[in-house]
Length: 126
Image 1 (cartoon, helix red, strand yellow):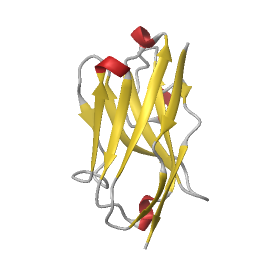
Image 2 (tube, rainbow, N blue to C red):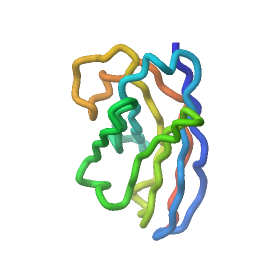
Image 3 (tube, one colour):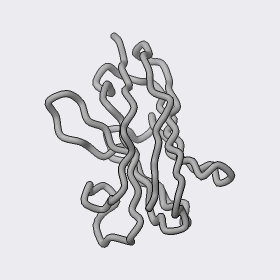
Image 4 (cartoon, rainbow, N blue to C red):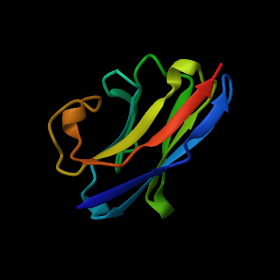
């Protein structure tokens, strides 16, 4: 099993930046991909970014390209999400997730991920 703990959320003004972290523990050798998703009130959980644990590959939806960067701190088994130029519509609970079974699904699909963190709240004020 893999355990994921998110941190770094908070309140920020529009145009500001936040850095979220996802700390992975347990059977981290089994991780294929780590993804970040977000869910705003009344909306479905949506894909934000993904990182290939061993490949280092990345994927982003068009809605966040150029503003959000995903990276891994190998020494800490942490995947970070650097978010810049934040907008009020970025307000959501942000979740990290891990694919530990090599699920054959696109990186932006929720069904690919079998381990999820508890989420961290990001609020962007206008």
